[in-house]
Length: 143
Image (cartoon, rainbow, N blue to C red; front, side, top):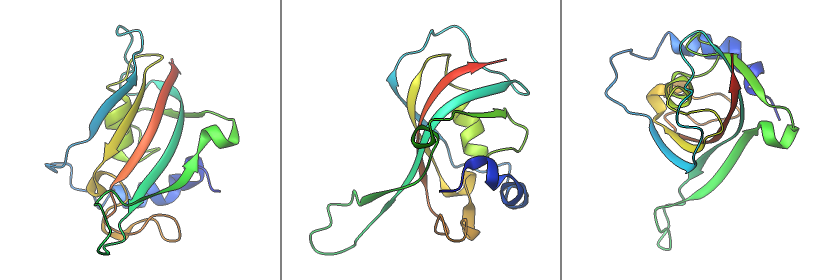
């Protein structure tokens, strides 16, 4: 399974296609609270554990609208946290937006609209075009 770190090159190319004034919002839902005091800022290096997924909708008569979760990447599975510099175009925009709202130790579900993820092109072979993403993220530390 490829890591987010290996996506850096294509992510930078795709970021240039995402409008900065997008009205699409990143949604953060807390699973467990952090310290509530220490939040990372632009340019700081964050260390996170994450599981990245999206939902496939069957569209059949028995489809309840929730779809089937498709996990496409996980630092937890590799047992190696991801480190990156916040708001430095090293990950998708929505991940920067969501993680900047977490305090140290916090674990949350971050829902990222397609426009702040891989957009109309998707990530060929990994994420379909125009797909909203869901990240289960824990902010371990930052410096």
